[in-house]
Length: 147
Image 1 (cartoon, rainbow, N blue to C red):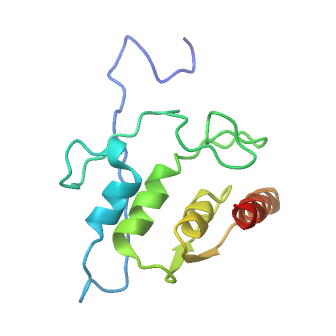
Image 2 (cartoon, rainbow, N blue to C red):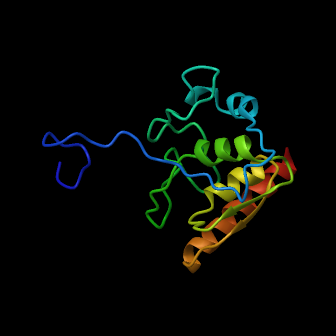
């Protein structure tokens, strides 16, 4: 299995860290009930804690332009499941707030912002990824208008 993370020579990393940054924590209450209601399958208990279990390639949240692997695109993107930014956004913002994604990539965080009724600002250096992200958001907004 050359080039694979699965190996008999070492243990594979089974966790990744998520950093959610805010300008202040004054007068902030986390919306744990909203995060749990949207994605209860990632928490062991109803007490939303700092350990979330999201199986790789769970395929639960497929979004426009992507197949079963939410993170696979024509550019070979290896990103993250929609549950991650969705849960972070629900925990720490209110409807109508603005989410900043300084490394937008294929736009998964923008998709999560739109789906949770937040605004977003995204930065991306790659024109190809910028076009992909814009198309994904545009397609999602068209789908939402049809519902």
